[in-house]
Length: 355
Image 1 (tube, rainbow, N blue to C red):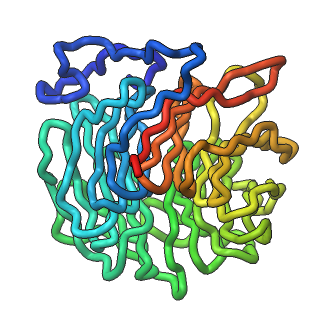
Image 2: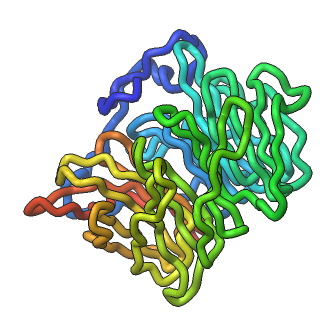
């Protein structure tokens, strides 16, 4: 289903909005490859887009400080559906796709997690148990997910039960900033304001390892593959602001990627055919996007997005396209191109609030 074609999504859910629109295939922008790029489009959100989740190429879920989340077709600029129900900023998103069942999880500053489905604009379930804002959220499988909070706890939940979490773990001063899960490694990684990245066992939520402490808050973490993990630091004027590449097996720091001048709130592995090397994308409060060669730590591309707002999140599709979000409703759709074997960005469209 997550293939790199733009045909209608196969599903057993008759109400699935992705199949609607008379089952027509998705349109690609008519100006691809033209000189009129990027297309400027009105913003779907009225405040910063603080969370992203990939559905499939061309489709992304956005969560915002405006307390809403939306399903977006970034090829056409269409907002397919919008969900409201949180009483605070939407801080984290997770999307699960199983046969005939799609659901979206959203974590919020209102301390709750909500489950949504494409056929309804109402939340199907609400999970409560955290005492501060939800700042980490990841699916473990189709039946369970893990959440984390500024209340220093991690919790595992059963998707079908909202009564209470199945398991809970707490570490002093462990103010969670992000959570990610690796199926091949069967391990949860979690970044924290205590400047550490921690690894957890998803079966019992036992702490497996604490990676060596950094000098700055770790804002984000992401598995690159079954061997490497990336985490990113906050900072200012180039102090801090680095991306750390970790060896999951030895739990050692392999290298640091330096060059950003502001905090780095998000990174994402790049799927691309331009080079055979492992590439990483990062966004920063310095309003730039960078592409890095993970193997030698060299920045191979840098681009400043044509907007007057900080960049906050990034995701990559498996067809070589990426989406970046930021303040003032910014949502940028970018294609990773290649020239002489080197990657570069082609900005296709930018959504932003018209001031």
